[in-house]
Image 1 (cartoon, rainbow, N blue to C red):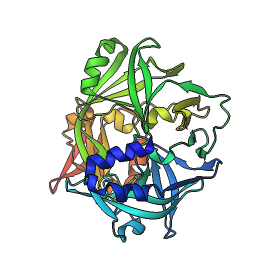
Image 2 (cartoon, one colour):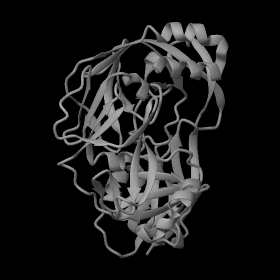
Image 3 (cartoon, helix red, strand yellow):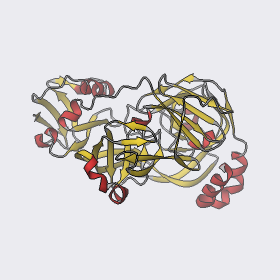
Image 4 (cartoon, rainbow, N blue to C red):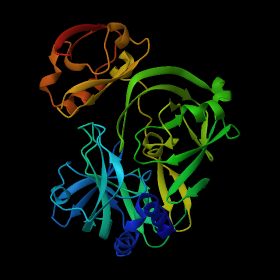
Length: 398
């Protein structure tokens, strides 16, 4: 199946490169350690990976991506100083520059749990628009072909096995496996509610994201089960295609099931620009997950250490969000319609300078976002200062 997938990919992109591509890809080897190792799990999953240059970089586990991909200009000198072996296909950088996708031969990518030998991987221009997410590539789903991948959210460990581990305590989840991706069936409105098909995507930090077209066709009749409708404009999605600005509608739904597992107060995001419906880490971290790539089966196990996060913080109370730009500045990335932030005159693109006379611009941007999200909630007014087109503006968030 992997050969067929790669064959189709190359035929579509550049049939003249097929013999060389297949010859190099056939030399790839995945060596697994068959043991659990510590990883980093936050809103995404990160794996420390060592290269032949002895550089150790964080590589995100993105099972919503097909192939393993590295990011140029992200601090990984091993790739930045190499010459590409082949070029085909196109990638779009964050500044909308279209360029040929370049492939590199990497002798070894090694983590504590598994190693990829003689890898032949593409590298794209750095599309990270949020400096707080510091990683140099993604491990894609095809990497684990014919293996068994176990993610234990409860203790932030991971293992890749040659043979299937014990299934005791695991529940088989209904999926549609379309190589190399798992699509999970989720019911909105109870076990017999609207049945929707979602890509299992550890590369997304969201809960459920649906395209507007799909939502209107499949889920609108469940509108009585959806509540807390909110509209956010200026919302930012970061993808390999660059920075996508969109207006999204969010809902909460209190009756969502994956098989027999009920998901409490789930957030559903509806977007005009999303093409693939996804189930992201905001849901997946509630479970331990076993992906059987050999038999195309998926198993869930309730994460006993999961704590439902607080539904509201300072940002949600005031109705806006921030991202960190390439200059390490805090930029307003989304505004909630009719929120305190919008009524104050705040606009997407404003650079945050001060909050209640505290100079946010003098604090590490990533630390500042964390500190602001932990501000003690009250409904008093907050004074903020922003930079907009070289003009400093004072605003009051009621």
